[in-house]
Image 1 (cartoon, one colour):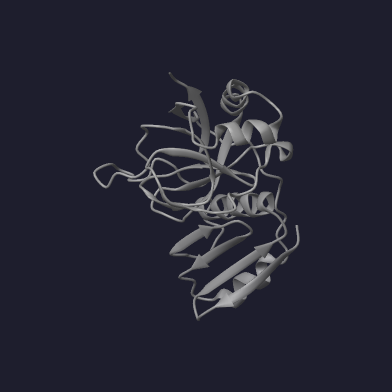
Image 2: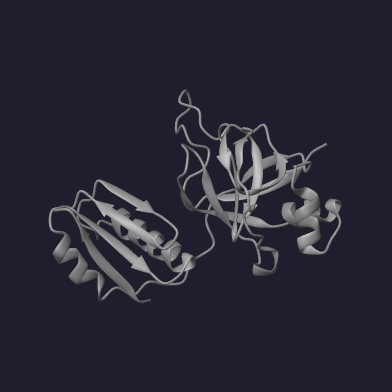
Length: 206
């Protein structure tokens, strides 16, 4: 895997890789090495679409040099039981997505709920996870005109990602359904239902 280590301030590194899958694999390797005691102390590890940020390092330059010799294995299947998210497939853009996929609206629900997803990274809003797992033939574009308000619980698609909104907010993703699952709850430990690496499945409900 080719990677580029960029210094961020005095105590952080931003690692750039070529693809989203590489970023997930590199993030998994960083966590593995940290848990094995083979990584210098680090305060935060933050994955994104094609980067991983490591913050709170005592010597970022030394770690960057060491990383150049790392062998990063391909992304393995995530461990643990998947989080199951119940969904009513009645979103405002369901008909448009069905047309893009070349199937019926009922088939969108069947296909989407038949896949297993993985949280690649989190962001945009507290608890929002960017879920990978859609085959490329099912990728859909963002809406040409974003909505000023997407309701909390909306399940949506954009490019290679599936996500669902933890709260009402503007958004340009294609809405295919809605869920009552609570993504972010400060009274819960952890507050976030999803975290990077979590397996997720969607379940059709009436």
